[in-house]
Image (cartoon, rainbow, N blue to C red; front, side, top):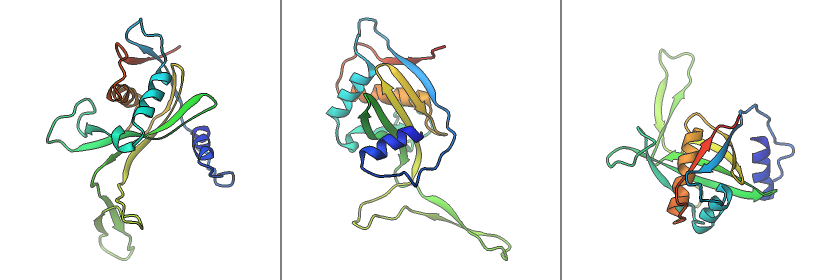
Length: 188
């Protein structure tokens, strides 16, 4: 994550030299393979084309049921999953997949060591200074794609399979015909 975060922030001109905090993270590697053997293009080329065709984040929102990451049935609480920030550098496409629930509140506790019980309240996310709404994030997952090589730093709520589904969904939403779909396989 350190390298991915460094690349993303460096592209934005943000210097993090004195602010970098190092944490151990598990990198998961997969090789993407199109389900149709006739397809000779790479996941990176399709994903880059898809991202270029939907430049606004609102067009990259995928609505997912909370109870089932596989479907989009009516009436269930839905979350938004989308690629937020992405950048190509050193020939590698880096990005972050973000998940949030519209209107979600967070629980807060007021700590009073002299009380018999603590007060718990629900807090809504505050608006920005210019009045734009905010949402609490459920999860962030980081990925890097080079040709058909995929590296993912998964989170508690967003796993490799979710990233695979979302990237295939985004390519389809962009109207790009693969003649199949990409599956990610273990490489030993």
